[in-house]
Length: 126
Image (spheres, rainbow, N blue to C red):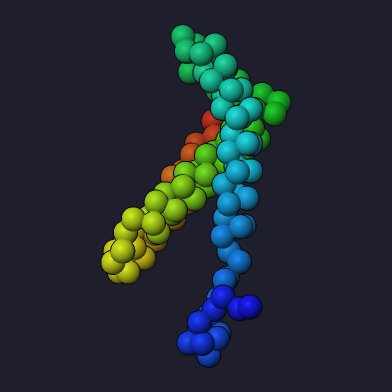
C-alpha cells in the first residue's frame, strides 16, 4: 500500500531524505560540543584574571588553536541547524522563511569566520 496521493505520484513528490541527515548532524555537533565546551570553560575560568600576553600564549600553545576552531565550527553549525528547524516549523510565509534562513546561514558563516580569524590572529601574531 502506497501512502502518497495520486497527485504526488504524478509530480514525483516525496521524501527528500534530508531530515535524517539534518537530525544526525544536529546530534553529532551536540555531542562534540560537550567535551569542547567543558575544556573551554575550564580554561576560561583559569585564565579569567590573566593578562593579554598570557592568553595569547595559551591560545597559541600546542593543540589549543585547533580545539578552539573546532569549538567555533561545531558551535555555529549546531546553532544554525537549530535555528533552521525553528524557522522552518514556525514561519509560514515563504518569503520570510527563505530570507530568515539565508540570514541565519550567512550570519553563522560570517561570525564563525570572524571567530576563526581571531583565533588564528592570536595564534600567529608576533
